[in-house]
Length: 252
Image (cartoon, rainbow, N blue to C red; front, side, top):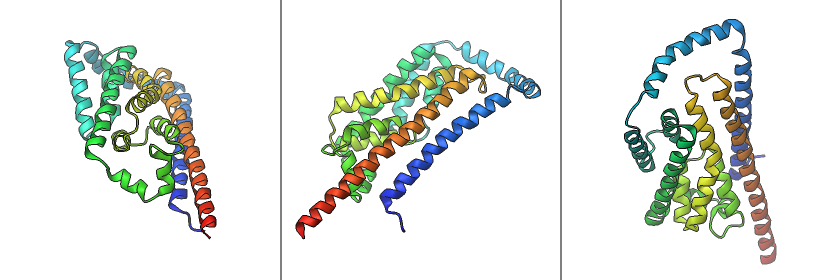
């Protein structure tokens, strides 16, 4: 039996969720293997090569200038897709303390969320709006009057795979309540930003527990978030289809 487009989307989400869990399992296995004597010796040689880079970053002066550059990068990223947000997360984490990095990235993402939301208001519908309008079953889960719009916003922001700017534009075009949108968007990002803050600080020892643990937690969290989003979509699809069937029966 041929799958509907909605069912294909659910299948893709299921696949991504499983991949997230499997990747976390692989990283756990890598951490165990790296403890083996000969492999650990080779790894320590690799870390010695990274020491010069670590000292160079630690010795950086003019932290305020670096902070300005980081916010300029956020501005550039909000206007384009030249590089992933992860790059900015790591840059701030490598230079500043985990707590400082977390605050910087929260401020940067809050700015980006607000900026792209208002571009959605000013520019109106984008590509994703057109896609959703072709699938009323999915559209009902997103739009302002939709049954699951609040839960869907939470789920979307928890999933790192989805394009951040595009989703912000979408909710702006729907004129979703701004402060609710902003608070949920930033709050849902915090677990991810906390993980990147500690990963960036330990990037010079990429196979250590200090680096891998937050990454593994992030992958497991992402997998759970994907399945949460999939569940909301599945329920929304079922309810919308039942509602359509009832209307069809009434018309007959």
